[in-house]
Length: 353
Image 1 (cartoon, one colour):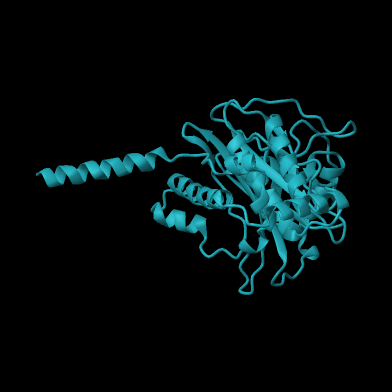
Image 2: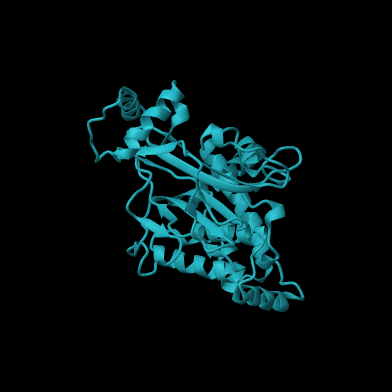
């Protein structure tokens, strides 16, 4: 968003952060919905699982990702394994009644629904699985929480220097006038950006008047730009970020970049990432993470857990088969087991001596 459109955050505000990074074209993306706390933090975690994992892994990023995934999955599994409360049936009936009557879902309902969808995808995006199975599971979750999945949200396959691969998972089944996605069967070693957004409204975000600062070069388009500022910007884009998204803030002369980007957009040389919003009063939540299909399972390489204050009570009445799915770990850190065996063997050898 343009600095001119900035806003001041206050405690209790719901904030969505969406970001990505790459090393030599290998991409990792994440998006998180959190609550601004009194001390200015974005979440009300007792412990930051990512930071704890990195410290425990001694700075080993791969091991840290595995540790963080294990910790987060353990938390989800613990919730899924809980016995339903005595009033579970009335609560389930109330949830169904709420959805049928059109009652507005709460912030917690929206956030928990989006988070559960993301966690289910982590278990369904595996070799042999299909994108249609993921979309169908998400539809069930949205119905249970009385929310709508946001239209037009796609989870793309990630490849080196490609952030929007052709293999995708669509957030909700397309109608006749919407985008149609062909069925895809997942294979080993694929990487996907699992992207989920839910809304208490229609789930049809509209472009706002806020100016974006994030764009992506369309390498198939060419045009003879007239303005020197535009030509200068395009030249720098082709040097710095020829295929991946970029921010106008990354350029030394941001003012010139803002001038030059207008002509580039007008002639489709770059595509903007627009600032979208639902209608006033609607609640939205967005979670995204990088899923890597490895030999040990599907690894959640980025992303955080759900803020405690955004947990919906409807999670307790989630259908049994979905709860069972959440209780199954998607990734087993085999290296951790090998290290434990190695340490145990060394200890035994030492005692024998």
